[in-house]
Length: 397
Ligand SMILES: Cc1cc2nc3c(=O)[nH]c(=O)nc-3n(C[C@H](O)[C@H](O)[C@H](O)COP(=O)(O)OP(=O)(O)OC[C@H]3O[C@@H](n4cnc5c(N)ncnc54)[C@H](O)[C@@H]3O)c2cc1C
Image (cartoon, rainbow, N blue to C red; front, side, top):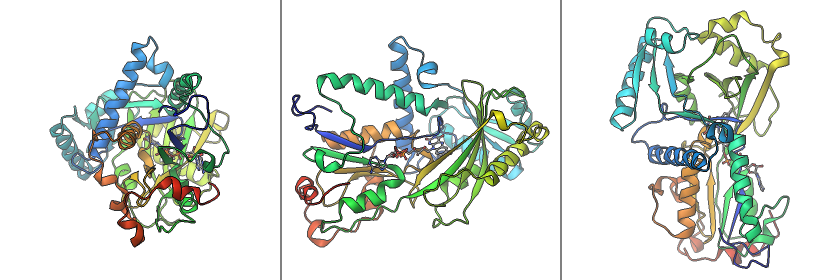
């Protein structure tokens, strides 16, 4: 976004607060567990298109997307073990094929051919999407940051750390993209205003177990068990009891085995739980029996545990749009376990809103009032209330 005054570093048009995709290094742009026709489908499809274009642009600039972004077309396998799960997978393949994606149902024997380490029994199989990708979130974010910083010399880009937002308020737009911290930040932002607005985002903790330079077997695709879909979608009221562990397994471009993943509501703690690591390991062992011959204790030196907080939003879809009652404050938060895969579609959606461009994807499902906004009557009918003036009335974020 352009600066309104090149001479002044504090006069940028747009301020983005947060903008993390903290990710956990390895991320997946998978469509295999998405539902055609669902509210998020178009955003997911558009996002994937934009990621593909992004990787292509990197390539056209003479770089290797695998090196720069950790970008790899591994394809994804949604794996089932029972005949009931196979029925689900069959329906999934039909649905995805109808929606125009390349999708194939693999029998147990066919699956064995493409992933020899996986053992799921005769009744099982998988939905296979050859065009799904994985990437390295940290490398991708580092590349985006590096490219953005090129605009700094023209006075069009700047990063601020530990600086209250109040110093940056004379802006055309402020985009709040602070993941699971968005609820408290919004409360602080509207503290002195006559607005009641709740962002019910909650941290949903997740563990990943990484075994470095893993040589016992190779994985050729990204894998997840069909139960993952239910775990991700669960929209129960957050409580500590809702711990779930479902198998995901991939191999990153450096040959590390990445096993996941857990979901639990335990506030903002990012402490490592050995109990959960053991559950992830045991669950993986149910799909890859050769892992049971290895002891996690013996792998102590080559293992790494990654913990992160997914921004969980009740209802299962992010909030993307203008904050009711404020004319220049936009929110983009609550992507739970899809923040990486939906990142570029979300960024485009917000940019179009700020610039007043027609949306590429219907943004109505993500509008804040469609979620839970409760705006006091004097603002409910006042779409033009100036966010700048209102925001100036309090002291900081
Ligand atoms: C185990 C695990 C596996 C995952 N796997 C995948 C995957 O395969 N694919 C996928 O798409 N997604 C995945 N995710 C989800 C993904 O990581 C999140 O959806 C994504 O990080 C959300 O991005 P975000 O930018 O909204 O929030 P975050 O990534 O949480 O970033 C928010 C940023 O805001 C900053 N911030 C907070 N408060 C303030 C403040 N007051 N001022 C300024 N900055 C502030 C924070 O420091 C942070 O950097 C996974 C998550 C976990 C935990």
